Length: 445
Ligand SMILES: C/C=C/C(=O)SCCNC(=O)CCNC(=O)[C@H](O)C(C)(C)COP(=O)(O)OP(=O)(O)OC[C@H]1O[C@@H](n2cnc3c(N)ncnc32)[C@H](O)[C@@H]1OP(=O)(O)O
Ligand SMILES: NC(=O)C1=CN([C@@H]2O[C@H](COP(=O)(O)OP(=O)(O)OC[C@H]3O[C@@H](n4cnc5c(N)ncnc54)[C@H](OP(=O)(O)O)[C@@H]3O)[C@@H](O)[C@H]2O)C=CC1
View 1 (spheres, rainbow, N blue to C red):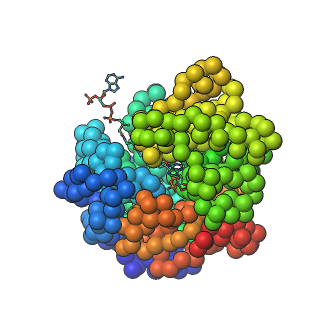
View 2 (cartoon, rainbow, N blue to C red):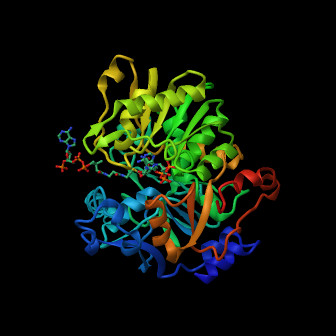
View 3 (tube, protein in one colour):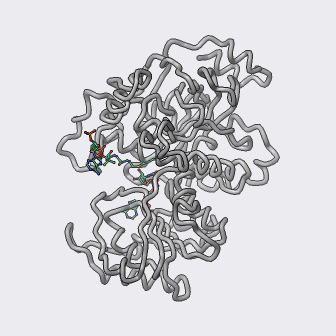
């Protein structure tokens, strides 16, 4: 592994040098274990501690198949899907690996008693499998997390609709929180040259998801002037949704839960900010009963901030806790676009406010190949910036996932895999200098 790292850090290693480097037999990876899936049985969700289920193991390098690449991972990031994996909710991810393993001979590799997790990476291609021509050893890359087989016509217009669509490192094995990862070569995209490894690894999953959910015509198709209600506006998804709204000439109404988070949104350029904690919204009177008066109070606050206008697009992901309010505050003909249900997936809302006012609910999930590429292009061009706040070592991934689970973090949390320190891998200092304040906006807040 040391030779691989030396080659990455040397300025003159060629593709042939990388191709000639021997692969190690094994590497360090963040895993959860199949024989521990019941370890949190009976506990409340918030009491399930990722630090107990997440392990750092030495694992064998997987066999490389056609159309695939092995990548030396310099840095990765923690996504909420790794929190779900680590607390075995809503399902153990080993069921996904078993199901994938049954599909074909090569996919059997994924069905193991350990799951190497992680759905983001920035690193360097080490080997490519048969049929891969666009990428070669030595290429500096990021990887998006869409794994598809594309053997069915269902996914040929929109690759997210492939019946064999999986999220890499969640529904497949050999993910990015490791020193080496296995991806399909179509997941690879050029690493933005003005970013360090850990900065480049931070946006991928959430940036692509926010792009489809908010900007793409497959999602809400946001346009100039739209009022966009963004829950968790300084969190993983929300920090990119806020940037897309601002860059696209829309008007973000940012919901956060502390003055520090409000300040971050303000510094991004948002003006309409609601501190849900300070304003004490209680959309549920008890576990079963919502309080429409609280929806109305929330809607009045939005009208104060918009000069009397209602919401064109709600960027939803908290789910059960907020969904009733989200449907209520949307304007006639407006859109609620949802990609998650962090607080509970059985939503309740008053359907009269949906049909009588001709509103629409759109389900959105990650991004298709092209949307992921377009989202990465915006990062590479310095139009959208990473929102990296804190960086952990690979062995402290459990703590990083704990922070995200307990909402102690801001923006995105990074993890150094092979990179020995932060700040390495920047190839374009000039572009970086232009955007340095925006790149560092979330650091250590
Ligand atoms: C990029 C990052 C993203 C995120 O972070 S997202 C957040 C994290 N993700 C999650 O929380 C989602 C986790 N996944 C799940 O909870 C489950 O994954 C799903 C609920 C999405 C699906 O559940 P399942 O059990 O896998 O699927 P089924 O469709 O309920 O059951 C499969 C069986 O049901 C049959 N079936 C499907 N549709 C129908 C139908 N319309 N009528 C009758 N049967 C149906 C199938 O064929 C199959 O059958 P057979 O078991 O025999 O193979
Ligand atoms: N389908 C898909 O493709 C994707 C789905 N997801 C899912 O989206 C969800 C959010 O992911 P991500 O943004 O990365 O997570 P983060 O934890 O980084 O951010 C979520 C933010 O939402 C806010 N929030 C959390 N709970 C509530 C609540 N009960 N009411 C109101 N606001 C709340 C918090 O902000 P504050 O406290 O400041 O209000 C929090 O910071 C997860 O469930 C994840 O699995 C994520 C990416 C892709």
